[in-house]
Image 1 (cartoon, rainbow, N blue to C red):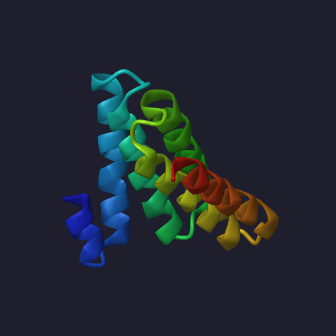
Image 2 (image 1 turned 60 degrees about the horizontal axis):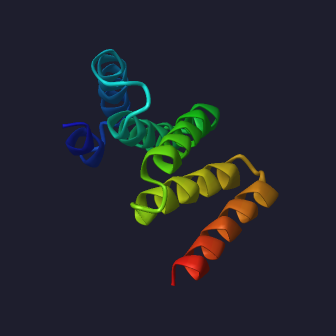
Length: 114
């Protein structure tokens, strides 16, 4: 539903719904779960689109930490997506060196994985 709202241009409403889902999920799932990692990623993306870059970075880092811990090398793509989002957020914050460092992490992971 939140993606539909986002796609229809209702970013704030989508973000509010995701926030509610996040807190409900914390009461249902273990804080260290793939569900929380995925919702954190969606909240990071939503926050970035709304221009709340500091909040987006918090959620993106949470998503990355959980995905690395839970998935390791099993779901390479999900870890890369989190790092890519972090790089984008740093770029939007004007922290280009940090953005480039994260992009280099992605390149290093792709080279190792190939």
